[in-house]
Amino acid sequence: MALLVGVLLAVFVFDGPLQWVAVVVGGAIEVGESFAWWRWSVRRRPRVGVEALVGRTVDVERGWTQVAGERWRVQGVADGPARIVAVDGLTLVAERPG
Image (cartoon, rainbow, N blue to C red; front, side, top):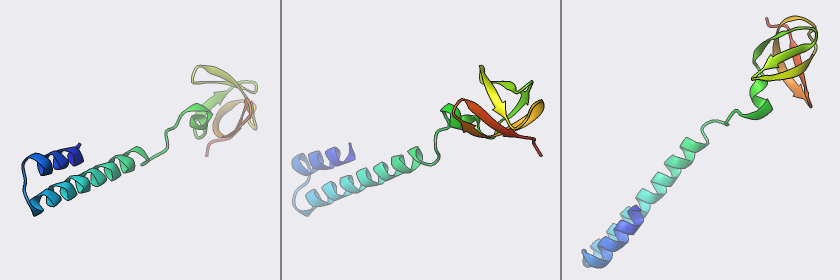
């Protein structure tokens, strides 16, 4: 948008070297804004899907647990509290918290 404003100012308002200044300043603002939006959007990975389960603490009963509204088989801990360390297919790999 800033580049468009700079071009319109250069065509309809400014004369001489100010035309180039308006276009360059508009382009610089566009580049800076694009860089700022890019940095903001990639500052951290979104945590969705099974990757979001890793690190959660769950309560395991007879090798099964309920996480985020779904029932999962748990490997590594039979009963009690556990921390999820990995997801192997449809099985959660867990260890005792500590």
